Image (cartoon, rainbow, N blue to C red; front, side, top):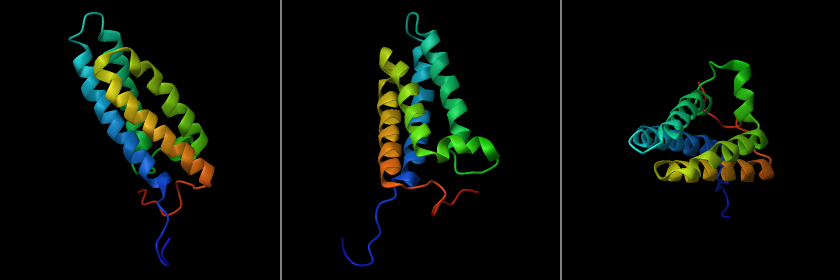
Length: 123
């Protein structure tokens, strides 16, 4: 690495990838209601994305609840666990893949020892 170049901080990028996954789940969840027996999947995707958005959005108004996504290990398990259900119906697969990618980024950040609060611009 060149002198003065900084290392890519995945703990700052993982929440942005997670937010993108939430937007994809919102769109895919709305599409699920047009599938036969897809309303349950659609409702799951919409509820999950609406619950995750405040945790991934860069603000501190949730206080102690934000600890869940400041800990990279817990965020990894949550992203992977939530994304499993998304692979069972077609409109949610891309959102599930992106949410799994966010989990991988949280995992790598946890292995590196990064914390979300270092260099973060949370409001």
